[in-house]
Length: 193
Image (tube, rainbow, N blue to C red; front, side, top):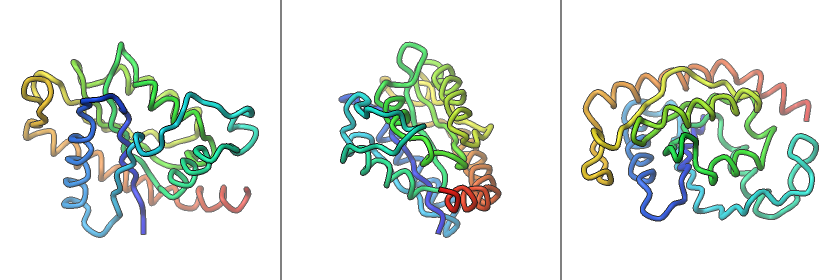
């Protein structure tokens, strides 16, 4: 069974990401049915310190227990939806730090983005797309941009506008299509390692 990890990119107290990620998962399960398992991957559950591996992931697997735990979780996923806010025009440091811990676990997997913020996190997602390319991920085109003024009440209670569900379904359809297309690439890469 295909496993799609829905990564909650913020660890900030009072974050909006949990509600957004639950919405993504609920709509994904309703839309895709048995096509995949959609699992929440909450960075809070991993408590990753600032990158503390002595050797970069490009040269060796991590040695710290928290790195191995994180690597196992990401390796078990076939594709990702990253739910991210935008802080000062970029993704939160918790998310970029978590991404930087690994390399081969990301490769050959598609990734889509659901952003939220003043302008829908479009600048943060732009930077994440560049990072995905370096990691050899398949960065898919559709994204969902949720604005705090229009998709939240008082900037905190998540109430997406109706058309956002259609955008998310489009993202999910393309993500699943790319996941199927990349199976052989991931299988070949796994056999080589």
